[in-house]
Length: 618
Image (cartoon, rainbow, N blue to C red; front, side, top):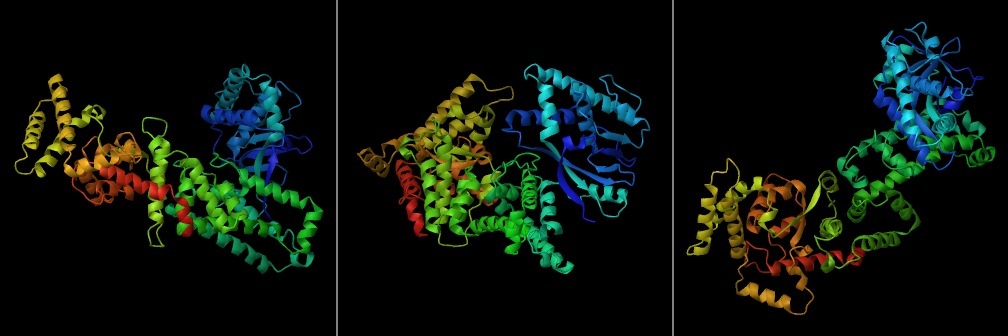
């Protein structure tokens, strides 16, 4: 016989006409829910009460697995903690409303458990561990209503209505001829589907569902043909799951660092059913598919239409799901889509809306819509109007990421994919290319800063450079201070002086640099790049690397970037180019981020990021 998998309302379980009687066998662990678990259930119900828009909405609890006994009772194979807590809650609500009925619940290990459960009070019963935890849960429920009832009028009445009318539990009834203990063991090693995705999979693989919509002759089709239909869906399901285990693909379609999904395919199911994304412990997609099938079965006209076209309803639903997945896979494997859509998803763009647009528009229209979305969201301001010290940090970060994405897209290699897995797993920040001031350097980092800069200047000392010799000597003096008891005022003052001397030394302008500044001072619209808080002095780095570079001078930062490169640390390409002076036609001051460097850098950003329509030709 076919196992039963369906939502059942708590209200149905309490109907006296149905006479639901549950039996908890001795091989089950006793009731052990404490304050955290009981309160979590109550808080979830309260949240649903507050945010549900109408009485048609359902709150779905995790499954219970049962098997009917010869005497009509249901042996509970899994989910008894939830079921018992629901019983305790209903028992508490019954105190204020005698119309609330209870189903029957009995523990094999406690001969008087049924009578005990029918007479619960807030008094703790310590006769045995089960009674202790059950009576404790009753007290927790009572206290919860006392605490929350003062701020929410008629809370008991409202929760009663929610529980009886809008709360469903996934009912998984084992019909097969098998030993209940064997079934219990299979559940606990994960062989019976209890997660949202496995419940949905069970819907797709159900022979009853596969037959829905086929004409009478085809419903009598050989068992082997139905098995083949099951096998095709099962193989395609497994292929989807395997693809989703590719972290690069996963990071492309899903940008959240925290993942509340039990399985990655749950995310795909939420996209297709347009369910709330990343909702913890959600059975939304299962409910959607179940309701669809239920609606079709109850509508003879719809069934007739399917039979006329000889179309299996569930195969039609599966084809739609697979089509959505294939679109995501196409985007991932297509260089243009990989870069542009990947960027938008990394910036929290609604993937469901992107999928809809892809289906509604032709290829050129879809591409144009993506570029227009980028322009509207991130490029409304000119680069000159953006500042690190304003509310523009997130915009600057997005523009610099887009700069890296577009630069990668413009590479001739058609197989290039952007590393969105690195973008997803790392925390990103803006790095000042030219160090700002000594005050931004943490005291604990100063000794290392002195050591690194002393070594750098000693390596790069040229003959007759008396100014640099003086700086080196000052750094040596500073490095010999005893700082075991903290920094003295003399130490702090000397460090501030040395930092200023180094800044002045590095910013000396030779003839070429003076020419560059003169060009900028002309009315060419680039005067703003002298501002150290502008994008001309900012690049993208992960937080760890940013901290490692600290307030080092440009030359030391470049050496550190090389060290990070050697150990294969991920550094965005355009950040690497900044410190290797990639943008400047002529490099005459390799230890300083010159005005000429800034202008070349900004012009490259402008040419790539603010001319997105050129990408339509790719």
